[in-house]
Image 1 (cartoon, one colour):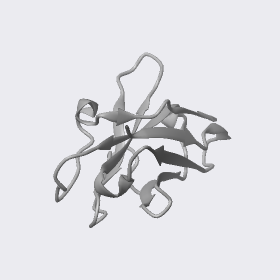
Image 2 (spheres, rainbow, N blue to C red; image 1 turned 135 degrees about the vertical axis):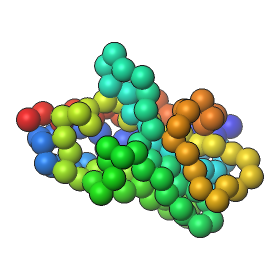
Image 3 (cartoon, rainbow, N blue to C red; image 1 turned 120 degrees about the horizontal axis):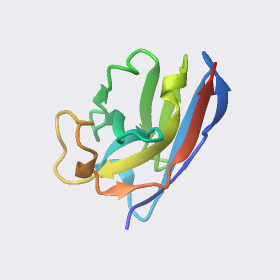
Length: 128
């Protein structure tokens, strides 16, 4: 059973950076699409970014394009989310998730229910 542990969250000022890590166990991440999602208090969980296996094609939410970068290191069985130029609206609990099945040509972050494996989340708080 694939499991995740996220880390790297924290309390930062507007404009600062954080790098979130997602360590997987129980299965090899190599064959999974990885997604990062976030949920702010009182709001729906929303997709932030995703990356497919093999070709490493990525998809980003419009709100984070140019500021966030998703990556993966299959050798370490880990995924990452580099977050730069953070804003207060980026505040929330960040989750990594995995989607198995046939390797797609691209990935989607619309509909978090597609992703069957989730971590416990890490809190990111950005203050101005």
